[in-house]
Length: 445
Image 1 (cartoon, rainbow, N blue to C red):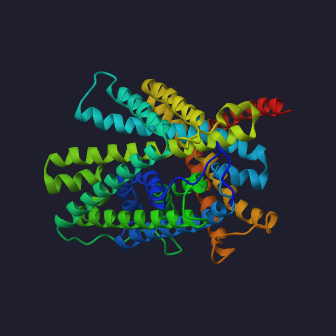
Image 2 (cartoon, rainbow, N blue to C red):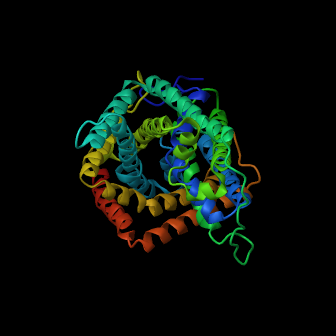
């Protein structure tokens, strides 16, 4: 077997590294915020756990679909590469545009402020403390990633491991300090026997499980053969699912069902009950760590979209450089860091504006996610001759279930955006993409 070309991605990550990257992206603020909402919308313990279990099952189905795509077409471009193969470079361009300008960089900026808000409670740096912390963490983690893939992976391994331990600390606090037993009220069910708001509750659960698809961006960089990324995806989701279910069960045990529904800060309420006022600082540290872990992993995968876009479009060719000594797309990382810093500065003036932009471009993300699901069918037909190290079991049933899930999330995100009269945000982002796309096409000739 010939050695890979220089200055291109090569297998440099262990399966454990990949698992920790995926875990770090998945476990974010959602698990600290959404359990009360899910409990309130489902209305009973049984339906609440039903929503979490169904969300986990749908995440596993999606992961199986991505496992086939990633093992058949391993590439640093991830979704971008799958969309290019299925629909051409023009369609994938708009996915990359939305991802580079808002989806990943906006998430990094918001997570940086989550970190800054919690650190300010520990030690304030003055009037703009949260913004200063946000800027510093983006700069620091950009530097870590620029130092090399090994350094970034090691940092990720430590942070993801500590994050899981932090969640397990909350589990311990809840299980060892149970609330008095009380019966939960019956759920308000619709005509089909399901809770009226079960679909909305499932939306929050799926959001909490979101991020496993980012594994595709390191599919070409995991050592251990064609199926290594499959193992990484499934191990990561198994770990996250186990921790999430234990976490929710501990919240239920520590607060009771009514207490869980009414809580504004569930993890803090459980830990303070167990450890006293010091528990608030413990939870602050865990949430800050969750933000750090997600930022680092998001930077790592986001830069690979930039690199892939640079390979396909001369206008962005400056991002196509790959440092084979450090196993990183150097310019791609600098661009991600710079855009994230710009959004942090904007958010320092109007944080709600950045959150508004990220929240209301969700329909764009789910639209392309849906296209990726459909791409599995397109690519099976178009590249039927290619060997597939892993095939989705129960084809076409499971891929269709994944597509339906994406369609449901697209519908719900559109509904949310329209209710808030903010669909123009998504349209503005994509309209700007059209202008840049025209320039890119002209440059391409």
